[in-house]
Length: 307
Length: 271
Image (tube, rainbow over all chains, first blue to last red; front, side, top):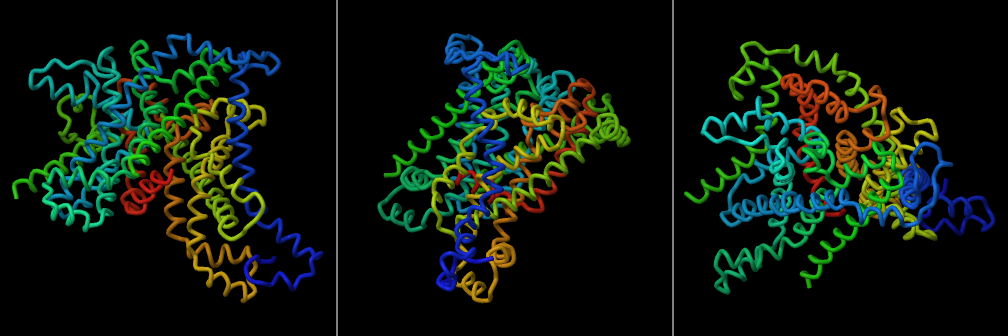
């Protein structure tokens, strides 16, 4: 085998097998990655786009008929689609803003008071973030169980007549949202703590020389210094809110009624329960486009604030 | 001092809220249903190991567990090898189409699984892989390629040129340079990447739920869902099933805490 580093190129005559091999060598290294990526990611994504232009029951390929953008038109006229989309939007404050605040406030306090051992708390806080969504759903479902769960038992003990949370028409969606916030706040805290440590100490000294108080230090130095981390927290959690599936599948499965129906669930049930595969894939395309547009917007927003 | 104490209390409260649901789930898994109603924090009179036996044997968790392990390592090992090869190609070679191929591979960072999972089901059916572990392994490797290539390119680019040049003079071929010189130098990156691939695969739910129908080829998350549907009101048994899933993850997390937190936060920043 030949290497491309060094100047041994001149040793080989131009027509030799060595030169030709060296030319294709990088492609050989890329081959496995590109091949598996193309076959099992790019091809199915292309499949999603193609199928979304057809009316297909998912049984025989011959039964698919081209309908153009009809599935997209149908989606925009389907109250079920808007209902699911609305629930994704309602989840955004719970999945994005609440955990960001719950992570930011203690991170700032720890830094301002120069508390030691902030790292000691990291592992415990971070734990929910690495757990599978289904597990989180199953765990909270029993904790919030109206008969056997500790939450209602405690509320009952202090004399509060608690709802059945995940089974309650009013409470189901906020409850799912709060579970999402619970899973994410530790992640936000850890990210913000790491970000604050990277802010140069001189900036704080300069602010203090200018006579800035604690609050001004936070707004003038800490928050701008955390722009990158904010962008990450917002875009990652925004995507989680839009793609929400695992936790909901394991807790309410869209119910009661359609109260917690979200796009990802709606898409799967359209494709596999209602056998409207074309329609399901159209929802998938819309979901992918929305995620992409929103994450680009968030990154833009924070980058523009940058300069 | 008062302020500090307040913040420490706040942090402690945050930890307690994050961890207690798991702890009481372990407790619940060792109780009878009657004991469960009597008090959340109370200890069982006698640990009900039978709950675990029911999960492990009747609930088929033994099978799901083995499947999860096979899929996790079936994804992890080839993903690391392919990521290293691709990262190496970008870090060491200049070639036609280099940036186009790079951008192409990174597209995976912005594509959600939802955008490919429906055709994947029909594809797997077509090539006869439906209801097999391959149906879970192959797409997961594909999903791993973007981040893997990105990270390993960065890792190999940071290896000093002199080291590579010295080994070329020693007559080492490029394949040997990759695995015997670059790879050991990039070990911290490989470690982080392995942990992330492992956790992503171990936690994946939508993919197995859609592409495999036969429970014999399911992994733990889907298994837990079946389990919850089957034993709806037998909470101690469900808690035992949940515990079987989160205890191994927690152990892996506690052992590799630093790398994992670093990997997941950096991974997020880069993504």
